[in-house]
Image (cartoon, rainbow, N blue to C red):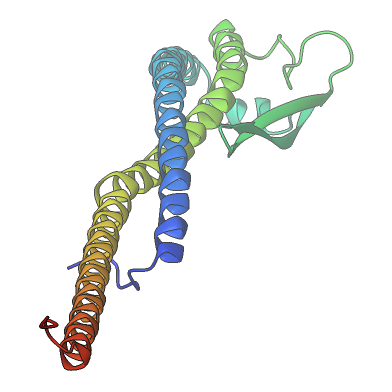
Length: 237
C-alpha cells in the first residue's frame, strides 16, 4: 500500500516527483542552515562563557569594594553619596538578522557629567574604597549589557536550531520516504497496468488472427467444394 492516499496515474506520478525534488532541495538547504546555526551558536556560547566569567569577576571586585567602603563609612553617608547620580543612561535596542533569526543589539548612551569625574559625590567626605567600587561597577556595566545581549542571542539561536532540526528530521524520516514509497507504488502500478494492456492487446490480436485464419480456411473449403461440384470428371474417348 502507498504511504500517501493518491490515485496511481501518470499525472500524480509527475506531481509527486516534482514534490520530491523540491523536498530534497529544501532538506539540503535546511541541513546547511542547521549546520551554520550550530556554528554561530557555538561561537556565541564561547563568547558567553568568557564574558560571564569577566562579569562575575568584575561584580566580585565591585561588591568587595562596596563592602570595604561600607566598613569605613557610615550607612547614612554612603547612601547620601550615591543617592543622586550625575549621569543618566538611555538604552537603545535594535535587531540583527543572523540566519533568519532577529537577535537583539543593545546600545546605551550616558548624558550628564560634562567635565571631571562622573562620581555623584565629593571626594572630601568619602573614602577611596567607594571610588574603587564605583569605578569597578562602571567598568562592568558595559560587559553586563553585552552579556544580556549574548545570552538572549544564544536563547533565540537554540530555539531556531531546534525548530530547524525538527523540520530536517520530518523531511528526512517522514516526508521524503513517504513520497519515495508512493512513487515506487505508482510506478509499479503503472507498469502492471501496461503489462495487462499489452497482454490484452496480444490476446485480441490472436483472436483476430484466428478468426482471419478460420475465415480464409472456410473460403478455401467453399471454393474447393464449388470446384468439385462443377468438375465433370474425366472425358472418355
